[in-house]
Image (cartoon, one colour):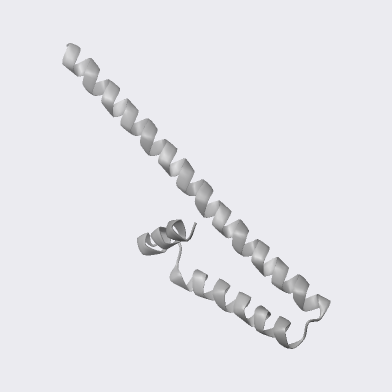
Amino acid sequence: MHEIIRKFVESGEIPKSRIDESFNRIMKLKYRLNHNPDETYRKELMQAHQEALASEKLVLEKTQENKALLEKAAEQGQSSKKSKKKK
């Protein structure tokens, strides 16, 4: 999962600042949880974690969609080459 996110950051599809913001938000919440284990902070940490997972899920879904499109394009390219060879 992390490799997929790294590739999207390297390609510019996900700004590094978005990853940094998410990381900082989670680390702040973890710090607060360790210093004040109040139920509110645990809920905030859980919400931040769920948001991070949802973001990763969207990246994975987009990757899978792009892969399917590339595979379809490759198949179409191969079939068009075969039909040209027959002519």
